[in-house]
Figure 1 (cartoon, rainbow, N blue to C red):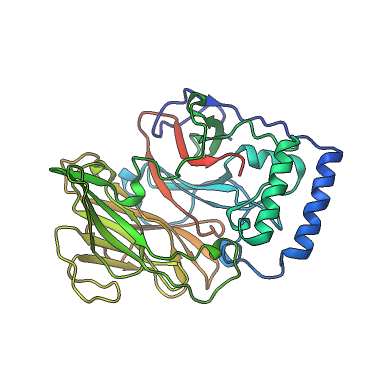
Figure 2: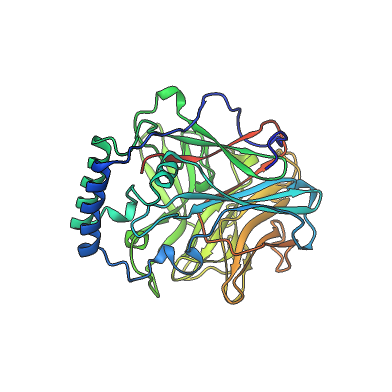
Length: 417
C-alpha cells in the first residue's frame, strides 16, 4: 500500500472523521448468548438453501490489493483519469452474517488500469473480525418469529456490552491512494449531532436522476417500483421475480401542495443516472439499467426527456424517448452505469461523455469494466478492461476525478447493524 502518496480525489475534506476502534467483550456472557443463538439457528434457520444474494456471482470474494497493468481492449479516454468505484454486499461470516460492505475500484491513469477491492472497515466488521464470526443482524433476519428472536439476541448483546455500539450512525470516509488502493479512515459522525439512522440516498442524491425547479413546481425524475419482493434479501434463489420498475416524472407544486406523476418507460429500468454537472438543473438525458426477470442488469438505456414516450410499450426498445440501448449479450450482466463528461461543466453538450460500469460473463466466469459512448450508445465499447477475477454484482457506483481532495465518502452506513 502506498502509505505516503495520496491522489487528489473526492467530495470533501477529512475534517471531523472519527477513528473507529470498538471494544467488544468476550467471556462467559458472550458464550451463553452464542449458545442460545445456535439453538435458534439450528431449529428455525434453513441454511441448506442457497440465498438469492449469496449465490452465483452474488457470492462474496476476498480482498484484492492493487493489481496493475490490466489488459485494455480499445482505449481509456483522458477524462477517465481517476477512480471508478462501486460498493456491494460481501458477507465475511455465516450462516447468519450481515452484509459487510466491499468497495471495488478501478484506478485509471494515462490509459492504464489498476483493480483493487477492500472491505469498508466499519465498527461491525471490526467487531465480527474480533469474534471470528457473525454477531449482528441483517435486514433479511427481520421476519417472523425467527426475526423477533434475532432482534432479542441483538438487544442482549448490546445491553450486556458484548457488542460496542457507541459509534452509532454515520458515513464512512475512504482515502484513495496514489496506486488506487482504498483505505478506510474512519467515521464521519457529523459532530455527534446524528442520533438516528438515515437514508443511504441523501438530499443530493444522484441515484434518483436528480430534480430541478420549474416555477412553483419541483420536478423529480425517478424510478418507481410497486410491491418489491423483500424476501430476495433473505430468500432462496428464484427463477423469476415480479419486477415493475419504471421511469417516472413526478411534479410537486410547492404552492398548492398538489402532486402528479407521468410514466416515462416500460418495465424494468433502475439505477437512473445523469450528467452530474446538471445536478439541480433541468436535464435532458437520463441513463438507466435494464433489468431481466430476476433483477439482473442486461443492458443500459438512454432516455431523452424532451421526447414523448411511445404509448402502449410493454418492453424497452429504441423509439420515442428511448434514444439508445446498449445490450450486454447472452450470459453477460452489468451494474449501475456512471456518466463521466468529456469536459466538466455545462458549456458542452449534456451527453458528450462516457458511461462506465462493471460487468460479468456467467459463461466464462470473467468480469470486466466496460466504457461506452454516451452520445451514440454504439454497440462497440470504447474500452473493455479485463479484471483479474470475478466481481460480484453490487449496488451503487461513482467516479471520482483527480481534483481537489484526498477523501471520498461512501454512502451512509449504519455502523452497528
